[in-house]
Image (cartoon, one colour):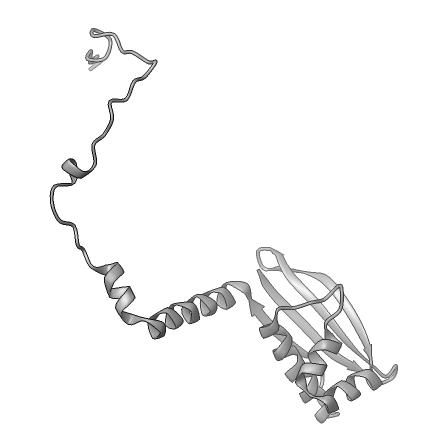
Length: 156
């Protein structure tokens, strides 16, 4: 699913507003959640570090994955560092995140034991498979009559 997070600072009401949109239909975004945070709480969390800010931004209703939450926190920090900066939009695609995770997992396996992968990929089939694997005679309750299965009808 594609997601968009809209982050804006409401200076009149001293709050941060984060809106989460999701692509529920092709090319149509729907508002999934809106969370507001007091400026005081955000500024304290920024002073404590990115981890504290991520904890502050995550709520019961809006709990983005770690990768998303870190990017949102970085955007919030940039928004508070530059008072002239307007609303920010961040786009995410779950397919990209899953592909990146899968690539990391493959790299981990390669780094851990490259010989294991070569063992898996080797084609070590020796001997006659028919001798090793004997198929038991299958007894079926279905029977085909001798004269029904071999007739071919030509309508041409």
